[in-house]
Image (tube, rainbow, N blue to C red; front, side, top):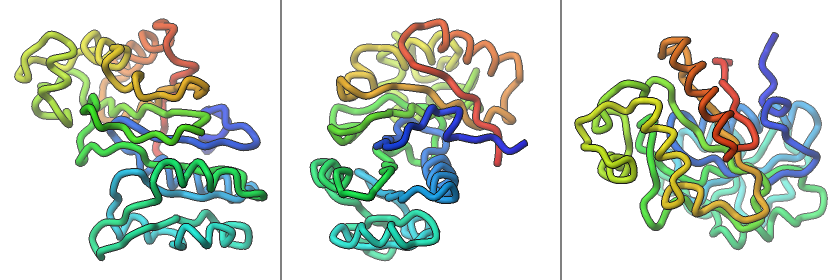
Length: 234
């Protein structure tokens, strides 16, 4: 049976979902957007960072002033502020919050962080860029990073190492991952007060099953997150 991200993420009738972290944010954004649209919801996608133009053009792209195109589109629409042929940008966070209030728009899904293709990260001071009206923050973690050198599988490895009190050439073990994910100076500092927070574990097929289960168990037992979902490949 195909995994339902909407069910496992606990998606309600109206949500502004921000994807942060590393390890497959764009993939989850498009997958959840398609699933919600297939159920008859109106869905807007966008980013507060930058996204590859080829990725964005998987779906219909519209300007911020044309978001109501989502109401009659066959699937989700991507709201694009600028497109230089290589990267697109979306509206600023305050404008995304305003668009979420558009009557008839059910869901807004936002890629709110960058990771340059890596599988784990902790944010710099200016990251992530999460709209204030966000109802759910999904922290994405790639399980293929478990046990690998911090410098090899992490974006901003020096920041990951510093939060965990390690060197960048040391292993990214499960204890280190949990320390970084729950650190008050990490991604949790940027989460709006009213938003729920969950973790999505991706690339589980690229890690040992026992390690994935242990990481999920430690996240579930931390008391810091609403839920932790192991995402199966579609």
